[in-house]
Image 1: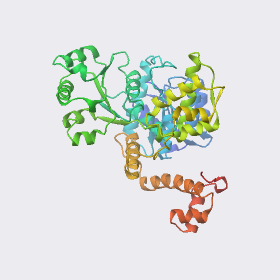
Image 2: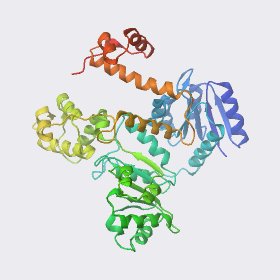
Image 3: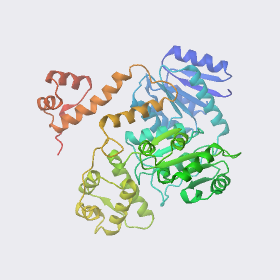
Image 4: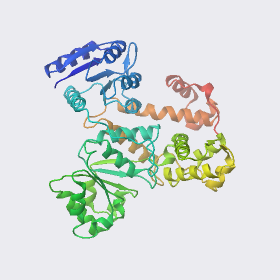
Length: 454
């Protein structure tokens, strides 16, 4: 490896180990126990890669990432942390860290990732032009944990050669995810080819598609709707891609495990495409993103010449409680209609009702499919957490960490539902009142802020 690495960690042993290992690998190393010193080095233009802990004596390493990005765009930052929670991993992804490793980390793995970061910094490829407004596409917008987990997974598979299977309901933005993976990958300067059944209807179809892709990305749109004969051609196409060797991706709004069991999707095709599985959450699974999406669509319409609009609190609440069977695409259409039909600058509840009609209440927020059990929803989120660690296992103590992260929102929501009445809450949860009090203290829940949900 060749380059300068800045190391910030309050543990002297870790600083020593990393300094020795990186120096032996051919790097120059500056190590410190202070974020202030680290930021001074960054501001002076030192370093090609940063390795930083999260909890430091003089601050939080994650909170420094936006400043590092502002001062030194493109400087890779690898975050290491003993705060091994799902939220830490999500926050690292949200802060656009180059990589995240929980402590205790595997030194060879960290060295490998540092080498990749140095190589990326040395090549410094120009980032693809990202248009702020692409009217024909859904926005990849969201701050909820579901979307942050999605961003993290997309980042992990972006520059691999694994085939990618993207699932989700209609209107969630599956094709956009595929396009983003291509546009920010090493194949960004090669074609992105979307393929449907008609493109492969004859024997020469696969050869034409491969020639068109030229080693870029081939996306099979709604693979579950393609008939068996064409699926067989896709299998042969994946097995014999020729010299171009493109990357294969597919989208599906049907459950491919079920489709495979009932024979509508070939097993050999499923196993070839399912190298990395990405599930795009339905809008009802991330209702806290709805105001952000509404604002995005309002600004888009305004840039296109439409009058400026804002949503009243009641209108926004109605949007939050609507079930959105058509997901983000339906939300966009609803906002566009309201921009044109609203009588004043502020969109009111009655106008929202006219656009949405009789609003079905939102279904269960957990789960990506109809009637999905809570256990299945939890299993999906746990698999994402394991995916965040790549080929490594999560740190020890996973059982207690997961229980705590489930227990906290459960008690908070139960307290909200009972108006902060601890006796009622304990009865609702089926636990002793003293036990509830202890958990409120241990989890640092502020009961005085509870309000009864209507």
